[in-house]
Amino acid sequence: MKKDQKPCLVTIRTNYPEFSVTERKIADYILKYPKKIIHSSINQIAEDLNVADSTVFRFCKRLGYKGYQALKIALASEVVSPLQDIHEQVDEGDTVETIASKVFQANQKTLVATLAVVDEEQLQLAVDALLAADSVKFFGSGGSSVVALDGYHKFLRTGLKVSAVIDSHFQLMEASQMSCNDCAVLISHSGSSRDVLQILEVVNATGAKSISITNYAKTPLSTGASIPLYTVSEETEYRSEALSSRIAQLTLIDALYVNILMKSGIAGQEALEKIRDAISVKRI
Image (tube, rainbow, N blue to C red; front, side, top):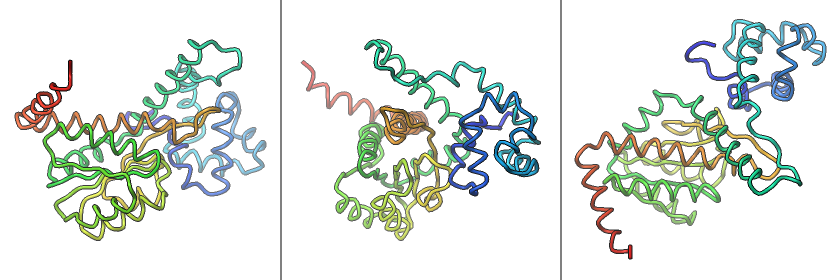
């Protein structure tokens, strides 16, 4: 695998929305039978899928590999990795400790997969935009509103002027008051939430910078935002993909927060100390 080549399965999942019907057919097969791919020829896979060898070859090229053999090698390194099968379905006879262990392992896998798709250049652009902003506003709808509030809670400590509201009407009102010197952080797992897309439209009209956090490579939110950032998660029997992505979204915001605090220098440390002093009165 090239140094900058993301894991094969992660690449397939994040680019899945962009695939054609035939490409999704091949993608589904690889995701479902990764070990079978390793031990099969391109002819066998093409025959199983009832497509031409050249169609499978072109799909491998689209993923960034020289050909089917290169994809097999990359896939093999993932399948033998302990992270590949780290999450197992929860069984009825599992103990409390076993279930807890599986949840922790699933979250670990989500974080590792998300780290693999983090684009350093985009992350740097996000940090720069946040540092340069007169104010930063966090937006999210439904479950993502909880993540937006977490971002607000963290970034209060940086000394930046930040805000976050839950009500969708208030969010639109807040967005309308932004200027070209402000920055919005919009969070939506699907990247197609109507509420968040309405906010993005208003934000873009003000000329403000926008940072999106979504789970797919190409969505209305990620393509409409100034700076797209991505997470990766899988749906399990007891947790939807959106719920599984929450830990990755929180961690991505955490990475932004620490970067901001480090680059803020003395001003950031002073803001952090003020927060600590202010809330110290709440401790017994």
